[in-house]
Length: 207
Image (cartoon, rainbow, N blue to C red; front, side):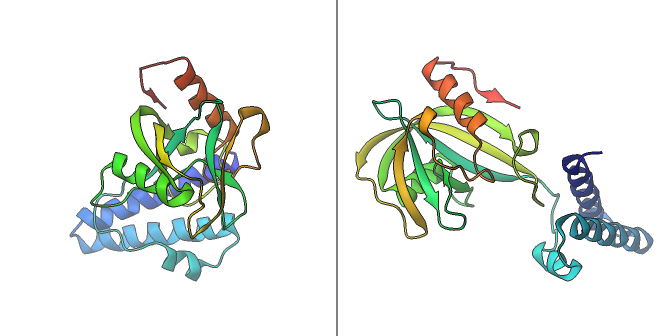
């Protein structure tokens, strides 16, 4: 079993435990679900080389049915076929603008806000082009299970200006990409998204 398969199995084990704790009112079952959750966190700590106490505090108590987290990102292409990118402060690497979906905002509102905040560019959403299951792609391993909503957006105004938590912003051609923040975006995904847009493929790609 590969590391990725082990991690996904552990995440599935924790999700089963969390679901049981949400819906069960039988003391015996609750005790067993708590034990399953404890085992999943210890296994995760072993894979991640982190202390159990640190990981245990990392996860908030599950109060409802566990579901994937949602990452929303925007692909903006200029007239030179260059891709708008932002440089992350946390790792000094580059990604297309985006972030976690916000409660109270639509996916479109989130992606436009992220583009503006991270790069200084005002944009409009053209269409949704892809929904990636992050675990189906070769991102670094992480505790969460994540879906990625990828929007094609068009710049309408503004000047390049990195946000307060970003180190840079700029346009890059596919053959001269900077070092990518692979927790957020992969070169294979950029090439795929670029292909979907330039070939005007209207059907939304879904993993």
